[in-house]
Image (cartoon, rainbow, N blue to C red; front, side, top):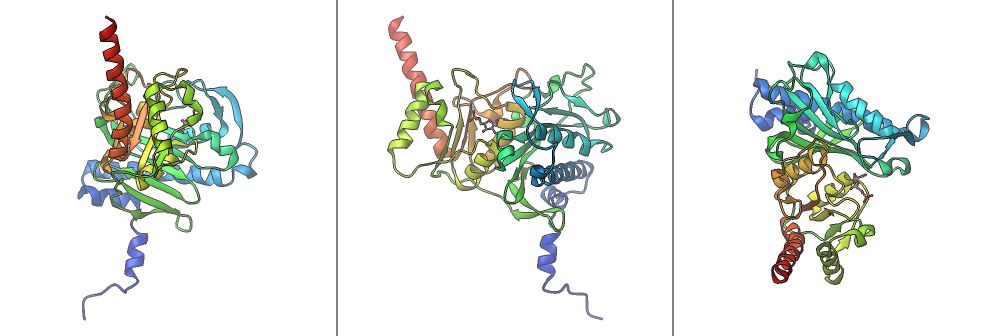
Length: 353
Ligand code: P6P
């Protein structure tokens, strides 16, 4: 009897079996305990993405899905019902997992602890459950951003102090982009990979491996409505791209959507400091650091304008940073305006003294 040979259709079947869980184990070339943990963590995140995608797809038909809760979160932002739903989804999918003891989120002032998982669970999920929630009520792109860190120490005072470390402590990072299709993009430090949700299977299936960000791209993405709140350096950069051919402005109001365009097609996204928010609007631990992890894995860069995002050590869980992210040449161009301006200011101060 000849050895069994899978049929030609096996390629299509095998592709449908390239789930996130399998991909993590393939990436690590291991079936060991940590590999199994990461595989299980990513599977739970995928489940959260499916639950949020399902809720978003029917939001217009459900009383409790759209609009505001009437509350204000720790950021001082009005809370959307979808923010709370998604926040609770990520908590629920990790219950009885034995994996995640703590969750830190844009929506919660302090980390949330899942008692049955602590102290067994040695991982912490940091996340923005719905990024760009102002887009929810108008059916435009929103996303979820996540980062996984290993818990260091027992955190007996439940302050999450061990989370106040730089971005190199991240084990994995990624996002889910809810759009015409729902995609999940992640990295465990071995390249950036994109999965597409196949609703007929209820699985995220591998679509693109090893995404690379071009060294330069045509897009600049920034909210020019803040122009008069910016430092002169950012205004000068904006004037430069206005006056030079080959640049197009794209800005959706959802970081994940704007970032995904930059990650895949090149260009630069900026959320600089403003007079109202000198430190910027975006939060380090669950927005800029996870995206910095990804862009560096894809050959791009992420900085505050003067410091690599991945090197920033936060003073508190909800610390914000200015954010310049994208193609390495385009980030360097934006930085050159910022650093030239700092040098000029330094020279002026020296001359005046
Ligand atoms: P602005 C959404 O609130 C968010 O946090 C990001 O998703 C987005 O990039 C940014 O804020 C938009 O802020 O001030 O331009 O409306």
